[in-house]
Image (cartoon, rainbow, N blue to C red; front, side):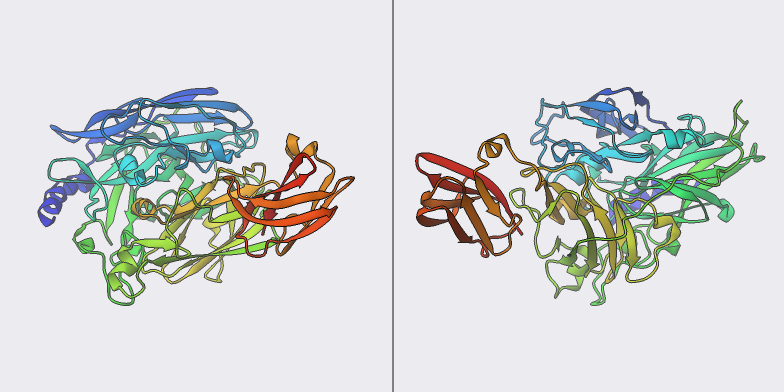
Length: 571
């Protein structure tokens, strides 16, 4: 392993000392129908060395999708990957959409298959992304190149004086590190992620106009957190986080982004024609415990093997060289004073606790290297970990009982941070978020609301966005149930009443005009009989459901020659 690292270190020295390659700006696709082909490719990260990669509509990475709020879009995603077992998925990270269209591990795209979800864009303007989310293959497929940016536009953002000409004064910046083995194949689950890429470009430089430019920063790495800043601690304005605009621009010299997080920043290059500045990661300033800091060490003394051999860890390094060139014909030269109005929820009716922990609490190595779980369980395709209800506002507390920081990501619905380990939330993290970095032996609390979409059978995910942690099972699922909806079958059976619904202990069943004759059966959604009770010629009955786990069930009642069914929710 150390031999491999030494080889890569020689290449890395070139990366940080001389920007040699123009930054590739991914092509932009617009409209409402997008044809996306997942395919094999070959990329030369190093001159003369061909490395097998994956891409969407190309050899590496994916086009940027530019869409408008309220549009209905169709995503025709075809999987042409070759090789054994290369089914995949595509998850629309940060988008608010039905569970069936979310692209988690339950929406598999088989080899030679096509998946065509159609959904409405409901998010406000912001920067999002798309990438695979397969069961056990996320790290491999993202590392090999399957990732792309989504830009959403709306009327609020359009009314602001902001740079928004794609590739001219508004730039996608997808930052990733990669590892290579001795055969120049992309490797995963290794500490040798020393090859730094921006938009898939090694040693990149960007020619940017001498005016205010917009950088859409995305940490698309499998593991590494970045602490972004510029040459000479030059200030910049943050205008948006994970899920949209902030209330007003925030002046910063640093912004920390963990895997999956995004930020939109404005950088003023006015009057700097002919000069060069660099976007850096000031990783020497990262607190220990974050992947990318100098040290990741548990209180029991465990460290990640070979972590200290990586020359990026705990060091400051250049991410992108920016060469300042002439202004465009219509430059933006002033910062806006206000952006939008966020309205965080204030009250919640449900509190939930999620504990991130190692499988072995007795191992110092396990505290930092894993495997890890959430609430004592690994991901199971056939298990629903959490059932919640439409239009419910909840507080989630995420407690990290490990020696390494974990970026926690929740699908579908954004959230607002309430506190970090009981303390204040930094201004740059007060906007809408879908990823939050939880430090070792600390907790965060956020408020969230389950709006618009419910599905009794298809769940959404929550998970650690360190990708090999996710692949190793550090993930759970949640289902959103609509308690107000009634199926056509149930509407025709209005002579039955079931209450309370949801129920905790005892379910009451009452018929109007008929008697219950025979068994009352309680079935799960797979049709399995969970319990039954004999009733003879009575118009009402009670059933003890206190022993059932939380979820959706079906009560089946026999009345004469009729079988009546009614759904209920066990809390």
